[in-house]
Length: 318
Image (cartoon, rainbow, N blue to C red; front, side, top):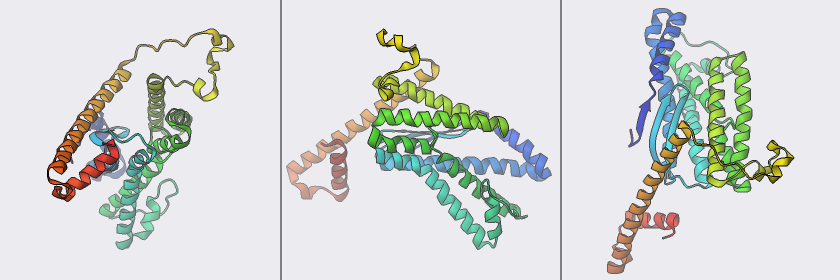
């Protein structure tokens, strides 16, 4: 899709079965088609959310490689986005922006269809009021509530959610990338604890979200330490976790990376290879255009060639 590989996790089949049973329980025989419709709307919405990230990343020079749809939502793999605050913030914010735009469009459709009272009913958390009895409008309300709910959830500053990514890159302009990552993952650990508490009280799904947030924060901390040698001591001036006697102890060698760490390393290596190949192609094309200028002058370039040369000069300083 648009040159981006989309993969479905096998566990989604189990989720579809669970949703079908739930829909049959609540809606009777109408659940035979409502259950699949709910799942389809959910994952089309998530796919559009992830495509928002991909297109924003590609706009800023990145390469969208893959979207994985899995039980906890979607994961977009985007490489080569410049490691600067603005491109990263725009790429992270694009997903919730898509959900907001879809929500506004769906609310407009309900209003034009004379169902304005159902807009309030579809609002997440505070929603109250009558849902329409027409099944078509009912699904529109469901899609509206889903998009607004996904937007509100994803703007939480809980790394690695979109809000956490925006927090990290926003802080990096003042604190630098390592310290900003440390702060963002610390906030992520805090939200993981909150999700776990509410998961025990309200929904097991929040427990899975808590595990997801905690694991990704741990991965990011480990990657930060492996890449830059950044430890808590770099924030506070000294790591007291080993006691005062550790002042005389050298830092321990890192443990052998586990399965997930090796998988992340392989994916990072593939992204780097792809980025290197892209840069070689760009530089080769720039050399061709410079030769053309030397031979026939600047006027020989077409407008697309001039735009390409200008963008390449800005990015690679060639």
